[in-house]
Image (cartoon, rainbow over all chains, first blue to last red; front, side):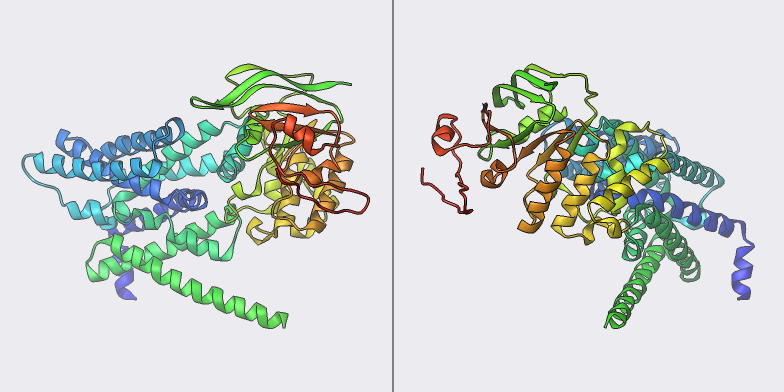
Length: 278
Length: 245
């Protein structure tokens, strides 16, 4: 217990806790949209494409997160555009973009003279080294996603649920689709620091899947996903510190443990309600 | 009688493929039009043109004194993602989308309307259920509520009799007959037998459209309409005869 109080007094650890909570908020909201809309593969594509942006920004001496954000948002808008305006198969396009982003990232990082960055921290996250800038960006993202959903949750959900029907009602389907896919890209990119490229998709899907076990309501699923996100990421954070391993891996590991516990709880609740019925 | 909608020599299709040729159709107040035709004949394309989902390549579509937002639409149910986290009540409220601004709130008036409809359709007890928990018939009722909550002047139904039992089918046509008192109905069906006993007129869509100004149709007429479908006849005692052709 004393140890926990001790590490809580460190500035870097407080930052990490802040990052974990902020990541849970943005991932909780955006991830619910991703899971409900079944665009997990698209999100995976955007994630890996953004690595190209990291490489290019590194090569040009810019902030890697800025590079990833620009690259990620444009890939996302590109995927949306290609799948709506052309008859190219969407999943093939995503597959190409996925690999291209990774390839570009590695080429540019290796071409950059001098010190090569620690690739591991991009791939698996390093929540213990988040800067104040990262925290500002994560806060801005949370405020943005909360406002978008507070103002337009119904149209967003209705369009996601039945796009064709929304079109017959002259709803701004295209605008909402582009807005949401851009938000998905931003959420992914800004959370790369916390869990890394390879694992960010689980932050966007596991807490949502756990929440989905207990509620079928979009709004409640968001609240649940944020809650499970916070619990899992804080657990993972302590584990990462204790074991001295990348935070992304321990956070995702905690999520899966939570998932298993939730499944057991869900099954016993089901059994219980059957007994009551009898 | 008031014309609500008029299609004049409409050609429509996808990319370079024309599916509908030279289609004329007039929808008047209190019409109940059954649309029949073979698969791939253009039934769905015709609905899409009317709903404004695709623009005609040629020809005109004109709405007379109705706001073209005010079309109620019940899509084919297999196009719906039944695992989507949305409740019955929310699905029904989404039928008011065109009445709302992007940032618009839903008022208690809207919720009262939804509740009233659910009561009429006997699905009020399901209002907080997820759509994934419903049977086919219950789901059709939910989507019918969504289609009519905005009080449209034209109601379009795309194969509402699939995935439902015959009991619900009867009930559905009872409801439609009542709705028809204050809205025009366009109904697409593959089961011409059932629809011909409820609709007032029949339109055959197979590339072009043939309008048949009555609900009685025979195999010869279908042939001249170039509409190769099975005909099911209804006599005094309901019986079904499938003719060879």
